Amino acid sequence: MKMIPVPKLTPRHKELLGFVKDSWTKLAASAACSAVVAAMTAAMAYLVKPAVEKIFEQKNPRMLMLIPAAVLAVFIIKGLAAYGSGYLLNFVGQDIIMRLRNRLYGHMQDLPLSFFQREKTGDLMSRITNDVNIISAMFTSAITGSIRDCFTIIGLVSVTFFLIPKLAIYAFVIFPVAGIPIFQFGRKVRRVRRGTQEAVADMNSFLHETLSGNKIVKAFGMEDHEKKRFAQKSRRIFRLEMKETRVKVMSSPLMEFLGGVGIAFIIWYGGHQVIRGAYTFGTFMSFLTAVGFMYEPLKKLSKLNNAVQRGLAAVDRIFDILERESDIVNPPDPVSIPPGAHRIHFENVDFKYDATLVLKNINLEVAPGEIIALVGVSGGGKTSLVNLVPRFYDVTAGRILIDGIDIRQTRVEDLRRQIAIVTQEPILFNDTARNNIAYGNPNATEQQIIQAARAAYAEEFIRGFPRGFDTPIGELGSRLSGGQKQRICIARALLKDAPVLILDEATSSLDSESEALVQKALENLMQGRTTFVIAHRLSTIGYAHRIIVVANGRIVEEGRHDELLARRGEYYKLYLMQFGNNFSPGMTPVSN
Image 1: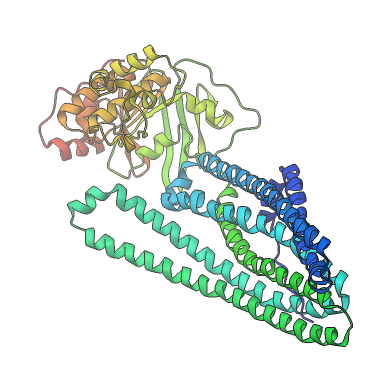
Image 2: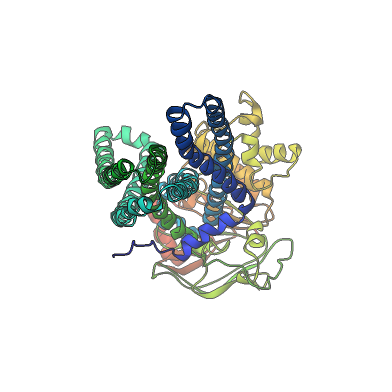
C-alpha cells in the first residue's frame, strides 16, 4: 500500500513551532477542554444505544426520564468545554502572531538602509499584514480546530471499536487511501498560495506608489492608465485565487464521496448482521451515529491541510526577511566616543554599491566645528560619502575615524547619537508638531521643544495652528508647506543637539522666501557643529569654511570659493553652469 506523504518540516517551521512551547500551560488546558468535548461527543453517540433499546424497544419509563437528562448534561458540559478550548487556543494563536509580527518589524528596523532601497515598501507591508494574518488563520482556526477534531475522532473511533470491532475495522480501511489525494492537493495549494501572496504584495506596492503620488497622476492625466494597471494586477490575483479555489474545493467532494462509500458499506454489511441477529438494532444505530458524527471533523481535517499549506507559504515569505542579516554590526568590544565636537577623518576610503565602485580613494579631514560644503554634479558620490559617516553603509576599503576611533569599533547606536541629519525631502510623521520636534529626544522638556522651534523659526507658524504644538501635521507633514516642514526638521535636529551635522540639499526644493528663513534656521543649527553640507546651488554655501568638489567618486578639488574659481577647474565649470560670467562677490566664505 502506498504510504500517505508526510509534509517535511524545515528549520523555519520548527522555529515557528518553538513559539508554541512558550504557551504550553494554556495549550495543555485547552487540550484538556478539547478532550472533554470529544468525550461528550462520543457519549452522545453511545447514548443512542440505550435510548433505542431502553426507551423505544423496552419502553422503560424510568429511562425516558434519565436519558434525556443525561443528554442535556452532556450538551452543557460540551458547551462549557468548547468555550474554554476555543478561547485558550485562540489566545495562544493570537499571542504567537503578535510576537511574530513584532519580531518581523523589529528585524526590519535593524536591517541596513540598502535593504530598504532594494525592497518595495508595499511588499514589506504585505509581509507584516497579509502574510502574518494568513499564519494567524492557520493557528487560530485551522490548527486550533484540528486539536479538537482529532480528540473527537479518537473518541468516536473508540466508541465504534467498543461497539462492533469487526465492522469498525472495515469502515476505517478507507481513511489511509483518502489521505493520499488530500496531501497532494495541499502541496499544490501551497505553491499557488505563494504566487497569490506575491501578487498581493505587488498590488500593495502599486497602491503605495499611486496613492502617495496621486498629485502627479492627476497632473499628467494618467488616471485611466493607472486604472488599467490596477485592473491587470487585480485580474492576476483573481486568476490565482480561482486556481487555488479549484484545488481546495475538490477535497470536500472527495471526502463526501469516500464518506458515502463508507456509510453505504456500513448500512449494507451492518444491516445483514442485524437481520442475522449478530447484534442488536440499538448497537448498530449507536455505531452508525458515531460514524456519522465522525465524518464532519474528518472533512474539517481535510480542509486543515489546505489552510496549513497556505500558512506555510506565508511562513516562507516571512522567514525570507527574518533570515536576512545586517552587514552593519556592532563590534564585540565597542569603544566609547568622547563627548564634544568631533574631528572626522576619511582615510583611503573606497565604497562599492551593488558591485559598482561609487567612491574611490577618499582622503578628507574635517576639523571640529568646521563647515564642509560638498558640491558636484548629480551622481558624483556626495550623498554616498556622507552616508558612510552614520554607517548607513560600511566602507569597502579604508576607514573613517572620529577623534581617531574607527567608527566600526563603536556601537552603531552610540555613533548615530552623535549625528543629526536634515534631508532634502523632509521626513515627518503623522503626529503632533511637538512629537515630531521631540522625535530624537523624547525626554525633552516643554521649554526645550519651544526653544528648538524658536531657533528654527518654526514657533510662530506652529502657534498659529488650532492646537498649537499639539496639532497633528498629517501624513508626511501633508498639512504644512515645504518651508514649514523643513523648519520642523531643523528644530528636530536642534533638539537632538548632536555634535555632527549632515545637511543633504536641505534648501534645494524651497522657494526664495522659504529658503531665506530656512537658511537662518540652519545658521543657528550649524553653530559649533562639525557640518557636512551637500549643496546643489552654489549660492547657498557662502558660509562654508571649505568647499569639496566630488566628481566620479573622487575628491577632485578642495579650497575656498575664490581659490577654486581662480583654478578654473571643476568648481569653475559648475559655477559657470549656474551663473554664467556673473561672478558673485557675495559668496565669501566665513572665517574659521
